[in-house]
Amino acid sequence: MRLNRFDPGNIRVSQGGGGFPGGGGGKLGCGTLVIALIGALVFGIDPGQMLGTIEGVQQQGQSSAPQPQDASTDPNTVCTRNAYSLESCNALDSLNRTWQPLFAQADIPFEQPMLRFYDGADRSGCGAAQSAMGPFYCPADQGIYIDTSFYDQLDRQLGAKGDFARYYVIAHEYGHHVQHLLGLDSQVRAAQQRDPSRANALQVRMELQADCYAGVWAGKHKDLIDPGDMEEGLGAASAIGDDALMRGAGQRVTPESFTHGSSAERMQWLKRGIQTGNEDACDTFAQEN
Ligand SMILES: [Zn+2]
Image 1: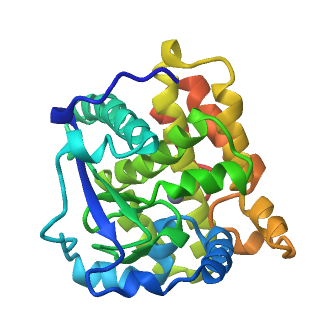
Image 2: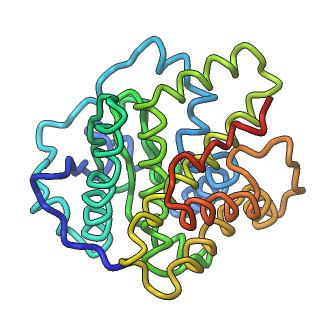
């Protein structure tokens, strides 16, 4: 996808340090990291999963993210750290420009999310962030957290190649921000608490909607899409389907424990978003009675 260079005035970013200020980030050795990574990929790449496990903390706390004193928030510094951060900032700018007017049209208050880069470990408003968790969105501080080394894992371990595979990741997390601004995440949490037996199914709907929203962003910029982008995105969506991850980890595929949707579902909803370019086409809850 051919994105313009970010406008520093149109994005919110920050750079976390490597590890916690207290040094907790250093405790993961290489072997631990690989095992933790597999676990994280299986049990949830992003805070969709965290919603289920630490929602009590989120709901009671709503704490703002502790910002280290030395955290840089200058896009010109943060976004030029490496090629991945530049790509991410370019996508973030485009995502802001795409979603902000839609909220304005609907007369719903909009706030830009903050894209937070970190190395290894960090703190978020939703608790500890570790690269093994994969990229995630934290509703409590409206932050998208990413250790860009995830993109190397996406390429090398999961075989999802190409720039659009990476844009899809950011756009998916941004989709969770959209859900948060619409109040969908708290509605889903409430429904999950009312009926825990539907918690996973509802979680999957949330994730598939974020996939669809990611596609909608791209679908609104069809002129910027390169040949092969669709395939790259669908390849990534397939690679991080719950069934593919379970198989990859040598586990039996158990649909009832899915949290993000199967490869086929993730591809289907991303594709639907791209093809329609219409956020109204993303009602993944419609089939859920
Ligand atoms: Zn997600």
